[in-house]
Image (cartoon, rainbow, N blue to C red; front, top):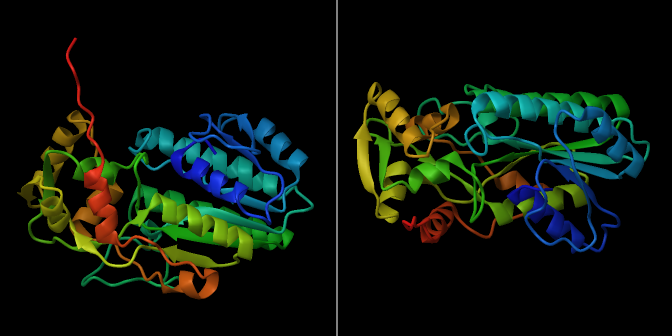
Length: 308
């Protein structure tokens, strides 16, 4: 509930007539003023306290957004550990709640792995074949949630989000695209899709309200390539072939925009998914298309450093 997406979901839940009491946890305080939600400041490693808070509240629905994207707020090692700790604690605690009816967990289209040939759009029944560390992290969340759901007999919804971009969302893809000089793959400038954070939050609210019990892709309509995004943002394109990406990655890290493996995959192979099921199952349609989300990304004010 402390991150940008979590606090946005909480704010939208507070406005829903079907939502009664609301409790959230995170390592940071909420980024929005919440009117009635109860918040607990806890670390992912505080498993006993997390279990105590969740079981005492005894919720009807649990929404797990505790996913640390590598190089978004922290590096890969910490992201992996924080996500694993939080997943074990929250999903395990949910299994102990007698009133629980459903659980919704955050996943991502990274679970489908690299695009193989042409720009295919995987549907939810496609086999999971993660090819990045982030994809494996998300697939593990889905697995744990599915196992608990079967054991205790509750609905488990899995929202497979496209890369989330938003005004205050920490995103390695967003940071990379906003650099003055942006690399792109000269030999394979494949298309990808994203989702705006407000649309992602709306999808979580809809999934919780419907007691979603299956995976659903949450993807903005349309697609864009890295070069097209660079041109729209009036950045300087830097064409690269395979070996040059290692050098570009190190330079980008120095500039404050690390390029984790799943973003390198996106830049090389693209990343698409079929989002039509969200309309059928949840009645959810994103308000912004992928090109519009990218335009909003470049419309945000840049940080200007002023010397003393």
